[in-house]
Length: 206
Image (cartoon, rainbow, N blue to C red):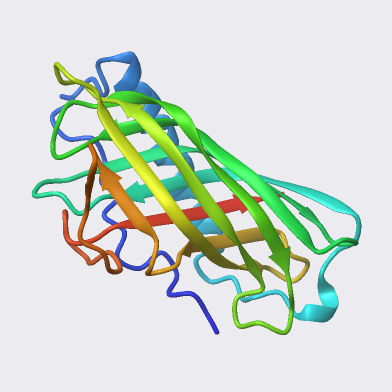
């Protein structure tokens, strides 16, 4: 089964930064992560899933970005650094995502402390989604008087991309729970517009 490549994620460029570009450290960090994500997606937009017989050996480290969308009335997008480590001899995958920066419900661009952990992950070429694992964590930050708290608890599903597993692309299972400030957000896959669904998309390369 092929993942709908990057479909529906409302990853927007910064608005209102003026002709000189991002103005704050957080806006500059967001722009850098945004640019990295766009470049990654461009490199693998047409990539095919890796044939089972062409997976590499040993331990491979993959680095890239993770994008979170939240189902809020106005745009909520957080982008962070992501890393997955695949052990092909043991068929194990683990990793994390951190250093998130972004906006929640149209608020100012801010950094978010905390991280997401990917664990209990496995590689199984007999499944539609070869890479599967648990994902969860708490992110705290925001530009308001009170911090926003984003919690994610669920599973990721993904596949290797390229002729020799040069990249891993993954997204969350529909049953994954997204919580903002203690309130569970409406579920479902993200749609093409802002605030239309929850999502977590990971794209990493070696």
